[in-house]
Image (cartoon, helix red, strand yellow):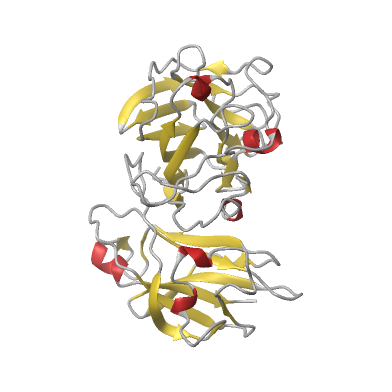
Length: 367
């Protein structure tokens, strides 16, 4: 079965530490966004530094609440140098099941400084995950023997399925292939991925360039290898601009930079409308890196400013047609929402660089 690409994140459009939790499901209140893998962009420290509860809760992305049979997660990671990076005995990643519990856990072993994979203990707490292997011993798979290059970025991928197979990759090289039970009793599938701090108060690692794929039909057939998730901002107004800018007359100027993605409404720059079916579209900055393009994701920062139900859909405009993404509910606080297109909806074929650069992105009010 092929796998559908469900989510990507570069973290480059977050402008301060309290924003990632709005596109992710929980946690990340104490994350930091400074110098990413390629220098000038951002990265994230899941849990960062802060309260005990927050650090070990980390950040979760649910991709299918009903559960899927396969899941792949890839991300760039840089583990801290020194003893602090391996002082804890808490998983830095967990594959979650449709029963709400950890199914598969990844550890940085404090004794050997190598990465280990395990089936989670069935009693591992599902809430803030304040636990350690000393209290809830998991069932380990074969030892990877892989010691990460501390202080250096590398690309890590995990692939598991409900049939009982697990594979781990580091920079596209297989470091673990094993079989065994990959589900707890009561779970029938996976629902997402959680990244967490290694110790109670510090993540112990940075991460960047995340992708998640699941067991639903799609174009992704296996691990993707090292990838880069690149963010681009609007540069000019698009084909339709029904919204009203908060300052001036240029809609694109309200959303053309990272500093606009912050919780300072109503003083921040923004575009607004209270008209059903109103559309706002923007031309986007061009990408320059060619190669395989696995998906295009449109991200929105949305908020309602009065009572009443309000919903929107992200728009990807390819050619002269607007393609609508998943409907999203607006709240009285900003949230980040989006939709991902694996292939060009105008051609139903994989994206080309020329096609991506010709797209426009935007939003439609649907309720």
